[in-house]
Each structure stands twice: as structure tokens, then as C-alpha cells.
Image (cartoon, rainbow, N blue to C red; front, side, top):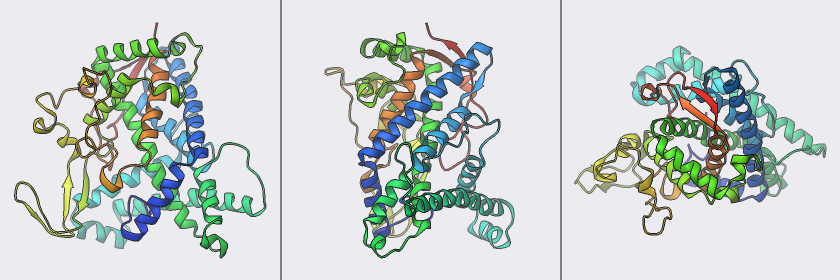
Length: 397
């Protein structure tokens, strides 16, 4: 599914993808598009939750957040409205996207001969994987082809700038563009890697955060106190959704979000290949090219790393008691956005987006997850909720 995108490439290919991603992430037009889309769909998200509250019905917020993010990030990525928040069932793109991730992680735990045989014979999970990748490709490549055709016909599209359009801008100014070459698969890989980086992580981060707020109401009270002090307009309705500049002032909210990401990371387990022979601090020898598993979910609960309260939710660990400013831990200790040369280029933008959504919701609504102690995670490349995360919604007064 990832093709030769930034998450699945190395060496010269990765360097090129990193450069492209860096140019996109620093583009003012894209930042404005992301902010506009997130704020617009946050209003819609809040309206759906308010309706659920008025009707006295619980709602699966994990499913809702997934619809919210596929809507927002498809607009940011493709410039289209999938209308997934109005659909009764899942959009085919969303269904295929989720199944591909589950099948991909199965390859790491099943004997290689087993899944390779399934792939060769077109059986089981591998047959479904092939069909789902085809669904994703058909949708994405069709959108790219339409965008490219409009540009060749000099047709202008109304609305915010999207990644496909920005990538085509870069292409047209490149040597390949001057020579008339165009690889739709290359652009497809860029967009799909962007979607997996933004859609899943945002929906899951919001879900686990609100579960933690149900379990730790004291933290939620402090967040609301900060919002009242810094952005009182969110509480009285004079501010509908905050801007990125406004949420930068919400220090305690960021501390609580980071603590939730510490305990419930978007990538709970990952594999790394050694670039060179290396001897670890405990004397373990790892050969060049050898794979190691990095259990980030477990690592974040180790007392020797985070202290005696490592397994507990403690937002205050992120606040310097002397300055009341955020504590900046090493990216190799706290790595929800990876670390080193492959650290996420959009991590600051992602944190600001989470703050926009959370501040907009908790300032107007009480979102109480039902039986939060029974909520657990599902098996995937990321950390989705298993089953539903149902919540009762009430107005916050």
C-alpha cells in the first residue's frame, strides 16, 4: 500500500521523498488548507455530537473520529469531499485502508512461507489485501488523473489548495516536468503515505485522549480552566473554533495530549534494520541488516525510563514546576512522531490540530466514555480501538 513513499523507502529514494515532503509541509498554502479543513470539519463534528446528546443516544466516537479524519484529510490530500460523515456505513476507501493495515502487520508475525504462499495462490488475507490495494489505487489514481487533466486544460478549481495540486506544481517546475514525464504512481505514493500519517494517528489520538479524560476528570477540569482563562470566547460561543495561533497558548492541554500519546502511541510496535554492525549498551551485538522490534507501547510504561509512575497518566510530568512551561524530553525518549532523521515533519502541525479539535469539543461538551476501563486496542500497524468506543454526550455548563 505504501509503495515507494516516505515510510517504505530508503537511501536515495527516501532522501528524495523527504525533500518533497519537506517542501510540502513548509508550504504556506498547505498549512492554511489544513487549518481551514480541520476547523471546518471540527464544527461539523461538534454538531453531530450535540445532536447525539439532544437525542439522548450514545455514539461511537472512535468511528466518528475516523470519519472526521478521512473527511478532513481527503480534502487536504485530494481536494475532494468524500461525505463520509453523512454516510450510514464506511466509505469503501476507509474500509480498504483499514483492512490493508491489519493484513500488513500479519506478515510480520506469520511465517513468511505462509503469507507468501497465500499471496502466490490468491488466498485468504493476501487475496483481500490485493483487492483492497486495488480499491485504494483506483480511487487515488482517478483523482490524480482528473486533477492532471484539468491542469492541462488550464481549468481552475475553486477551493483550498491540496497535496495533489501542490505536488503537481512541484512536478511542473522539475526537470521531469520540463521533459513531459509524469509518474502517477509516484504521486499516488506521496498522497497515500500522507493519509496514513494523518488520518489514523489523529482519530486514534482523539479517542484515547477522551477515554483518559473520562478516567481522569481532574485533568479535564484543569484543561477547561486554562481554556476559560486564555480563550474564554470558546466557552461563551464568541469563538467557534480557535486558530493555530490561539491554541499555542494552551500549555496544559498540550501536556495532557502528550501524556496520552505517551501511553497510547500511534505506532505501538515497529521494526528497524541496523544500518551498521553495533553493540548495544548491555553488550548485545546486532549485525548490519538485522531487524529488531521496537515495542514503543511497552517502552513507555517502563519505570527505568519514566519513573515509578510510568504506567500512570500524569500530565504534570510535562510541566516545569518552576517556569510553568512545557518540558521538552528527548525525541528518543518520547517518540510518538519517530526520532532521528526520520522524525515526522508535520509533528508540530499535528499537535496544533489536535489542540484545535479538543479545545473546540471540551469547551462546549461533556464527552463521557462508557466503561472506559473495558476499552482496549485492536491488532494493526497503528493503535485503533477494538470494537466501539461508545460515549454519552451532554452540554458542558
